[in-house]
Amino acid sequence: MMEFDYSQGSLVVYIRGDIDHHTAKKIREEADMLLVQLAPEKLILDLNDVSFMDSSGLGLVLGRYKKAKAAGIDFLVTNCDRRIIQIFEMAGIERIISIEERITNK
Amino acid sequence: MKKRENILETKFPSLSRNESLARSLVSAFIMQSDPTVSELSDIKCAVSEAVTNSIVHGYKEQSGTIYMRIESSSDRIIKIEIRDKGCGIENIETAMQPLYTSDPEGERSGMGFTVMETFCDKVRVVSKKGKGTKVVLIKKLSPKEL
Ligand SMILES: Nc1ncnc2c1ncn2[C@@H]1O[C@H](COP(=O)(O)OP(=O)(O)OP(=O)(O)O)[C@@H](O)[C@H]1O
Ligand SMILES: [Mg+2]
Image (cartoon, rainbow over all chains, first blue to last red; front, side, top):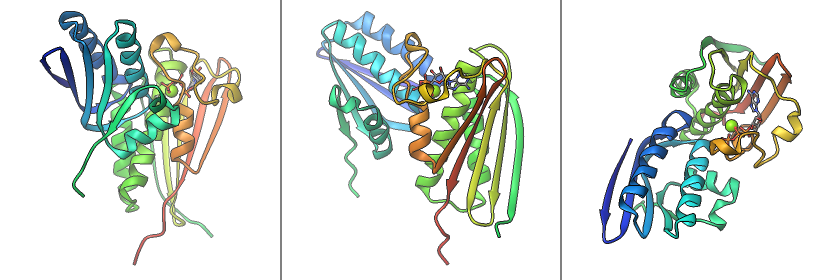
């Protein structure tokens, strides 16, 4: 499941629920369609409402990063919880992709 | 001596929607052992990886059956077996290397086994080319507070 916001060249894609192999396909298709339709300058994936993610999420994020990079679009992943960051770090992708942790007031 | 506490044995078709079903079954089973939030998340993620691999690689997104067996014992060790009768793995050592994937076109990152090994205490893989693959995940739950 996803929703999006577009303003002033920035496309924010809010991914909701589980990211696994089953859901990644649809999220990928929808996000890529928005990229083509809106041709933004910046793509932000917001993972605040992601309840579960496995390595399929790595493939999804890396795939969008590569697409964005090839089209000269800035790319950022925001509102990741600790566990999601941990999975990103296993693959070392925080070294090439800008990833922001979710700020919680706790 | 450890004593077996409970077992769940199940099989389901290799449909991608059963990835979340497998996670739900495992979490319902593990809840009986009162795990921490992070232990539960670890196990769900590892199971998701193994089941997805059977669907994507073992059966190459074609129809097949996935077998799952979960066992808990009195020493708080959870053992989960996920088995398919798919294509098998030719070289297990290579397959388990971080970032190795036989399917880079499919937007896979090659991190499934690494995730399983990070989130479990032990991962054992038995596979035979053309016969299938069995992944055994072992997770030790922390002692229950009294
Ligand atoms: N059940 C299986 N049957 C056949 N081959 C498998 C099976 N599980 C894993 N493999 C092989 O092992 C490789 C590595 O698996 P791993 O889960 O680490 O990465 P991946 O599935 O390719 O990518 P990711 O899990 O990051 O999406 C796979 O690419 C595949 O070749
Ligand atoms: Mg995998």
